[in-house]
Amino acid sequence: MQTELGGPIGVETTPVHYAYVARYSYTDAVVQNENFLRLSPYADAYQTPGPCSVATFPQGRQVEYPDRLGNTVHRVRINAPHQELIIAAAGKVWLNRHTIVVPDLPLSGAEYGLEAQEFLSASRLADPESVANAALEAAAGATTLLYTVDNIVQWIYANIRYERGHTSVNTSAADVLVSRRGVCQDQAHLGLAMLRALGIPARYVSGLLTRQPGETHAWIEFLHPHLGWLPADPTRGVVIHIGTDYLKFGIGRDYSEVPPVSGSFISRGDGQLVFTTAEVFFGRDAVTVDDALNLLRSDDAAS
Image (tube, rainbow, N blue to C red):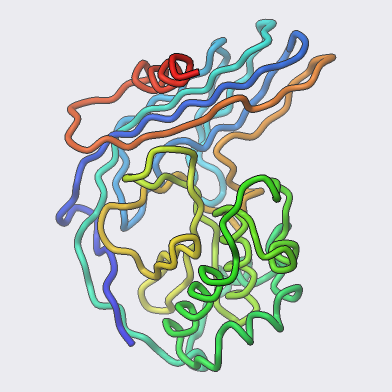
């Protein structure tokens, strides 16, 4: 088996812009709010980041830095009292459309270096031992890398029903296997755990579907010994997707390492996410934080 994959940066690229917005509300005044935002494009063979802006309302002190996996993080601390927080991001990315042939190879001959070991071992939400028997069944006797990945992805696509409201950001791969339902994050975690159980390094990816406005999306990447990290999406039943359908924000061992937004606040009340959405624009000259805020205003008008 062989297939095709996005090639080197700078070949047949498509420029796109994106906008992201989220609104949080609190039942009492928040006196301090600190958030870690991973809403900037990741730099790799699939895409080249352009200018990106991340803003919060109220504004706070902002520091930008790369984490240990190369994700861009904006750390924002807000000290002004507030009962609502809006987070907005906008940027430009060049998506790579070039294709190269990806050869298959026997699993028994796949050798990985020490840097791959953390993506073979258990993480907080994706423990390979907890799904090992199911992984063997889903692999259906495949003995090569690409066939094994494809069998796992297709098994999840066919057997795990996409359904909201039954899982949370703390739902593990083992829980998803039992319930047989969840969202893209849950399907990705099960894929990670199953591939790791079969000796294939796998990592979690957070980003956007470029042609499907809405919330952030999650998929996975598995490691090819000669060609590096290759994408697969259990939610859509796709292995090594080609073209410009995905925009990547960041990677981690599972969701707990790369949420788009994470943080804490000090208040006597509770807080909740009220609304979030994102959109990718083809053919636009520019997209700004104001465009992201307009997505929020569109929701206000609809409601």
